[in-house]
Amino acid sequence: MKTTKEENKGKTVLITGASNGFGMEFAKLFAQDGYNLVLVARSTERLKNLGYDLQDEHQLEHVCIITSDLTRPEAPQEIYEELKSSGIQVDVLVNNAGAGLHGFFHETDLEREQAIIQLNINTPVALTKLFLQDMKQRNEGKILNLASVVSFMPSPLMAIYGATKAFMLSFSEALTNELQDTNITVTALCPGASNTMFFRRAGAAHTKAANGSLSEPADVARDGYNALMNGEMRVVSGLMNKVQTTASGVLPDSATAATMRHLMEEEESETTNYAE
Image 1 (cartoon, rainbow, N blue to C red):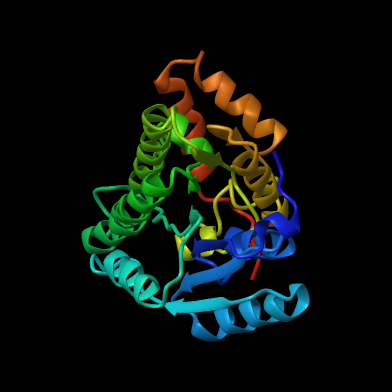
Image 2: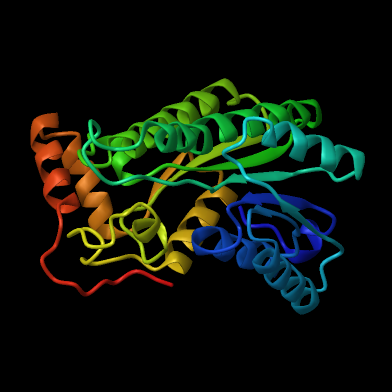
């Protein structure tokens, strides 16, 4: 059930990867509904421009900017301690930051993939552990984890990314069960290919997936936000993505893997569709 702006006054959301893409859109949605913001990413200037503009526009009590490289194992504890020392209570946690790497696993860079595992799995798990313990004491809170449509199927040429997103979906749904007798909810958002910088940063800008039909970040964020506020366990954003994930439960994994490989193969065209 959606709360009013007055009811949200004094509440705070922490959003990782908040400087662009889904994270930026989440920040806009939460600010519009009166939440104070803790924005985390590596780009200080982008975070400041976004956060302070939203603070002025929506008359927020406070906006906290934290510049952090979330591929560092120490980052979650540092963020937690910084907010604790500042007396900031996190009422909603949005584990949005994530990355992928395109290519055959035997050819890709191991060090970069280990950083992706840290960013996509270890960091959200650690942040969830730290802030969930506080939520449990208050018996109140919300957590949104970014999964993906590839959480449901093998993802050749993006094997590590797909595996991390399968983890996040399983992790989120397990926590939902553990917390079923509390006032704390965990929601997994599963978007498909979207018009963000993801493909460019993953070295996949010329794949069929990147040059196909892409969801808009604002639409994906809105689906996730609504599901979070309604206490839903999982939401797949976009009609065709819903069809795809439903089909993945019927078709053999070999068939879905073949489809995903086709989408992740290079497109002959040089035109790209991703957002700057």
